Image (cartoon, helix red, strand yellow):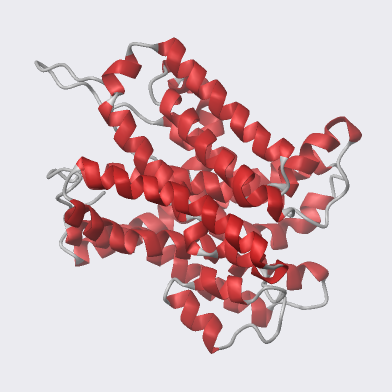
Length: 394
C-alpha cells in the first residue's frame, strides 16, 4: 500500500557548475493511479454487469485487482529509499529520529481516523443491506482481542493469514498491506546503518527478491489452508518492496547513462507494460499456482522496469498526464477511504445502470474525498506531529 503525496527529485546527471532543478516524478503518480484503480476495481461489487464490448478486459482487471497492492509495494520501496537517501547524510547514515517521526506523521493520523470511522459505521449504520456486511462487519465476532492487538501492532496481515476461511470486511481487510510495509520499514533504517555499504545492501535486496517467490510457492504447495499465508505473510511481499529499493539504487547509479538513451528507456517501459499485462491477463489471483510465482513476480519486475525507464523519459512529464496522476497523489487516502465512499455513494453509482460509468464516478468521488481529507486533515496533522518531534514542515 503506497503512502504519501508525490515529491520531487532529480536522479539524472547533474552539472557540476549548477545543480539541476528538481523534476517532478509524475510517472510515480501515474503508476500509483493504476495500482489504486486496480484495487478499487477488485472491491467494486454489487453493480450491473459490464458491457460485452469491454467485459473481457474488465473481468481480468477486476479479478486480478489485488495485484495493485504489489505495484504499491514497489513504488513504496523506491520512495522510502529515496527519502532516506535525501536526508543529507546518505543512504547508509539515516537519521532515525527524522525517518520514524516522518513515518508516524504520515501514517498514523489517517490510520486512526479510519479505525474510528469503521467502528462508527459498524455499530451505527443499518445492517439490513448486503453491502453493510461486505464493507464493515462481515463477521460479528471479528472484533476480538487478536483482531485489535494485530491491528495496532501492525501485524494484521498475519491475523488475515491465520483467519483463512473467516470473512473480514473490506474496510478492515485493506489494513493488511499497511502492516506489511510497517514491518519492513521499522527495521529498514537500522539495517541500512548496519550494512553500511552497497555490496551487503545489494546482497540483502537480492535475497529478499528470491525469498518472496519461494515463500509464496512453498505456502501454496503445503496445503490449501496455507494459501493465505503465501498471500498475506510478510515474506511473500517483502520481495516487492525490495524491488522498489533496488530500483532507486539502480536509477541513481545509472541515471546519467539512461538519461542519454531514451530508446533504451522506452524499451524498458514497454517491457514493464508487457509483464504487467501478462500478470493481469494471463494469470489468476484465485489460482495460487499462478499467483505464487508468476503473477506477483511479473507485477514486481514489470513495475520495476516501467519506472526505471519512465523516470528518464520526458514523455511522462507532460501536463497531458496530470489529471491521470491525481488518484496516485492521494492514493493513501483513497486506499483507506474508498470502501466508505462505495457504501454511501452506492445508490448513486447503480442509478446510471452502466458499470463503466459507475466505476469512473466511484473513482472521481473517492479521489475528491481523499484530496479533501489530505488537505484539511492529513496535512495539518502531519505538520503537528512533525513539530512535536522538532522537525521542519514537509
